[in-house]
Image (cartoon, rainbow, N blue to C red):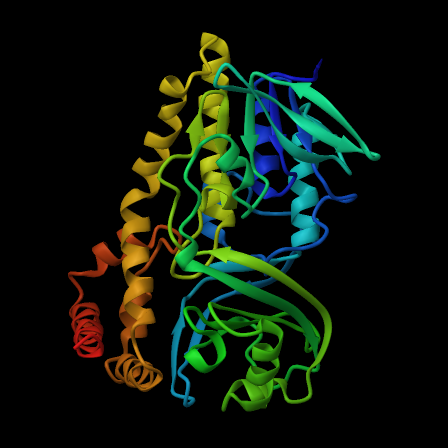
Length: 407
């Protein structure tokens, strides 16, 4: 067995690179194994990130080449074309080029001292005396054994390493299949507003989205619990009463598929010598599917806990459980609220969604939601808004729809 480092990180995506960066800058010997030949390729998500979240992580402003657009708000469209807009006075999110964003984070980590090995697929964990103490790596058709004191799983949505470590996998009942496309010749959209399209006919259990870019280009996509996502996307582009106007002349130039886990964080993301971050631990918002900011926030915690564990020479699950407690303290309440909202919304019929969007527009809910400062930790944001009469009215209305949907 070759000892390569104190910490091995599996996966060179945002969460893996951010964990590696936070370890390397503390002087920890860290190695990142990435199975693909290039960081960021293939791209796995739309790259729609909250500016406040990036600032909290010390990453904003990003290099100008990474940012494709800044967004001031969102327009929600119901299945029959009812619309409700929410616009802020200042940009709240940005659309990033995910390939360049991932490369930017990897460069930060490498400049801090992390070592990267590409075309290096982790086949399995090395487990001895109930401790994860390394990984088996396949490079150039040869499998080798590499040792480390801690392994951080940032591989993505696959639960295979979690299972090998004896940990629970994410809730499969809340798994979705997503499709992401880049489109040319998009018409009749506001360049600084994201469009969200609701309806079981197009995206059961989730929604479809359009993120405007420059020069009539856009990123579009959806996720659904049922159906063929590519066919559903084509159906959205040609039959939805609003999306079809925007996309009837659209030309898809790039298409990718990816799974999505909306079941909330795994119950346990640590074991002896092992931590899981990001999609691997289902650090994903059940409401919107966004996981980059939450995952990187947990990756930073993982790096801090791993650093302390190495200093104490204690990589046992007893000590590493600190990671779970800190992540739960940061995310637990919000994950619980967002998961309840997702499950509640999934029970509504398309007709009820039409009514809900119409009601939100009628009471001018957008005016109240302009007070929102936090869009990643949505449970706390909603709790703060409960003093607002419009927000209370909207919640009671949604609750009424939910109750009638379940009678």
